[in-house]
Image 1 (cartoon, rainbow, N blue to C red):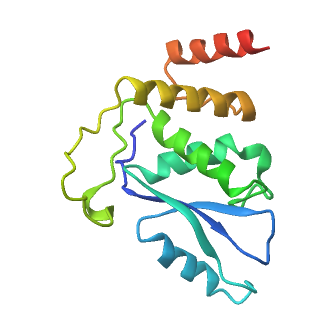
Image 2 (cartoon, rainbow, N blue to C red; image 1 turned 180 degrees about the vertical axis):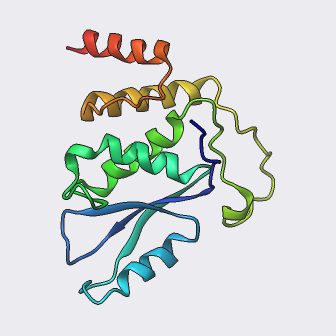
Image 3 (cartoon, rainbow, N blue to C red; image 1 turned 90 degrees about the vertical axis):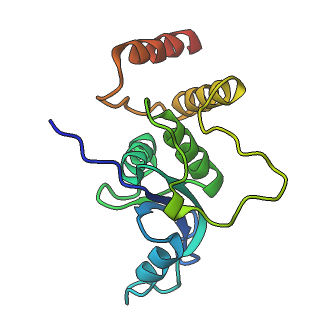
Length: 171
């Protein structure tokens, strides 16, 4: 089985006043604003989609797939990307999914960066170490505890066993 090359892009959350309580979570390799405009141009959409939040990631397809799995029980229709969840929760799940893919550095690809660095700030490394790594692990475990998603097939056995141990300890 060959793995598709990582495709940098955006994972976004769109809202629409005509669909209260629902968010659309998807991916794009263009800008989220362009994607929202494209979706809003359909004749069956009464009001335009609004970008509620977006995150640039180095592999948008992998992150989107993980998010959709984690929120599968909140999905409105199995063939659509609409979920009955608030923007804050959707954002937390995306952040957890973006940080949980093992062996990858989740840096914003140069072509997706917006704005420059502030003057006087030192450039930091992109590796997660210390507190950042601990915070990411806690966030992933919190999402798993709340949503209890089906764990992905690609998860290494020791990691899977660790999640199962946490699940047993939690109740």
